[in-house]
Length: 53
Image 1: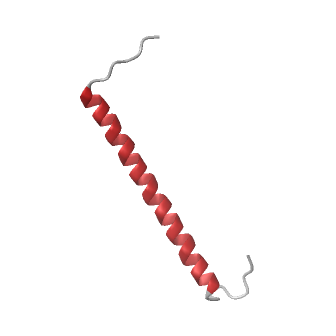
Image 2: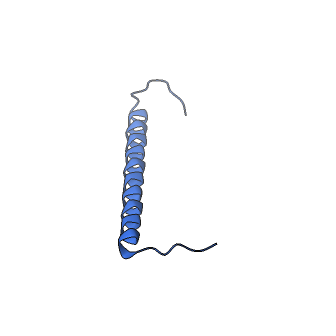
Image 3: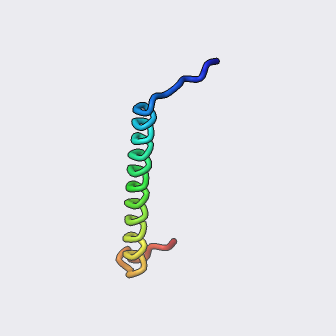
């Protein structure tokens, strides 16, 4: 099976897509972490009443 030869432009485009995907994934992970932190702080401060973990 022959291996495709990529041009510099194609490789740059692929690299850019990978970087954008990683950035998007990191932003979502950061947002999830922020939400968990806020919820834990609310729990710790007793804002959920009698909730047990």
